[in-house]
Each structure stands twice: as C-alpha cells, then as structure tokens.
Image (cartoon, rainbow, N blue to C red):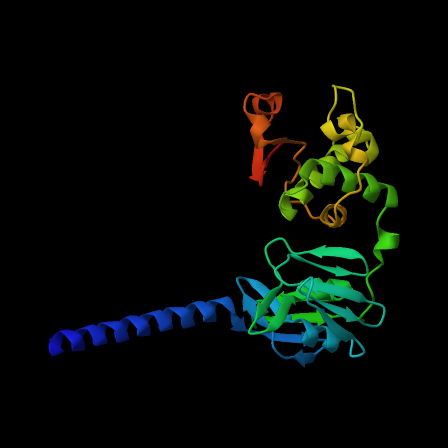
Length: 280
C-alpha cells in the first residue's frame, strides 16, 4: 500500500512539473523575445518581437516620442488614451487598431496585447501616428524609428465626409454583427467597385446602382438610411486608409443565400469572412 502511495505521489509530482513547464514555455512564447528599439539613435527599453511583429509598451513608446504625453485608462473600453503634442490616441487591448487623431490605423496580423499587466502595441502603428519612418534591421534584429515627430493629419480633414457617410451606412446595413474584418471587407468591395470601371465611380453611385437590378438590398429596403454602428464607422475609415482584406473582390453574398446564386455560378471565389463569402 505504501509503495502504491509513493508511486502515486511521484506520478502527481511529475505531472505537475510537466504542466508547470508547459505553462512556462507557453507564457515565454506569448511574450516573445527582447529586441532593440531606437528613436533617432536614442534607445528605448522594453521592445519585443512577438509572432513576427515588433511590439513596445504603449506608454514607454509614446513617451519616448512625445515626453509631454499623458495617459488615462478607460476601463469600460479596455483602452489606454494618450494626450500628447498634437496627437490624441486610443489603443484598445485585443484589437487590431489604434485611433490617432480620429484616424483608424490598422495592423492586419497583429493585435494590441496586455502582457504581465502592460499594454503592448505594434511599433509601426504608433510610429505612423507621429509620421515617423519605421524600419526593421534584420542584421541586428532591431527596430529603428527616424524623423521629426509630426502629428498625423486629423481624420476630419483626411476622410471625405460624404464617403464616410455612405460607406459606413452600407457596411452597417450589410454586415451588422459580422466580425470587424468582415465589415472592412464589405467596405473593400464597395471601394473596389468605384475603381473597377464596370460600376459607378462614387460610393453613393455604387450603393444605389440599378444598372443590373438592385445591387445592395439595404438600398431597396431603406435600411441604408439607418444610423451606422460605431464599428461600421471604424471599418469605413480603415478601408479608406487603404486596408484591403479582400483584394480586388467585387461581390459578396451571405452564406444562407449563396448556394445556387448568380454570384456563386459566375464569379471566382476569394474567401469567406464570418457569414459572408467574397468573390472576384
């Protein structure tokens, strides 16, 4: 009996050790590895390479660029808000974007992360908010930011108000409840049509195009006139920033209506995002 008990105790101890080692390794992988970061030859501490993306602690990075910046934590939205010299910025934990001067700066493959209680953001996003050049030095495994910190142009001046108005409404009406990436993709389709030559060359014209019948159901039902969701406005801005998640796609269809549809029969498949299937 004693021998059995000792064996059981040893087994449990070994199991706990293995689990602890697995947890430690996983945690180590999640926080990446330290890398060097400099801004105009001045070193900045805390940068890490995580899953191929260069990150830095949000407060450390912003203060290194703009020492006058102050910070508040918005617990309701799980975000850090900084007020600096000409740059007002919000970095949301677990999101692919930051908002700087009412602009949506998006990182397709990287999210803002909280690691050991600290908010880390992709370095390129913050560099862009201050119009700094950002370069990866593969030889030294380091990130170099250069230039004179200059606030990014405000979204009120950068975005076309009429385009935001209609693009956010069609995104909201067509993809309410879809993942943020799917909402951007719907915006991509509309903007791609304005550039294709086969459709009207304005967002308004594309939405209300009747050349081959109703193109977008919300234009016929009237839901296009409803106020857009906040996420739809952000998605519209991201699309206008040049974020393309479905390159050159001109059509999309809901999963439930796709089988046997004209689009399925006549267009080439691009990809599926959420409940929408996108086609070229």
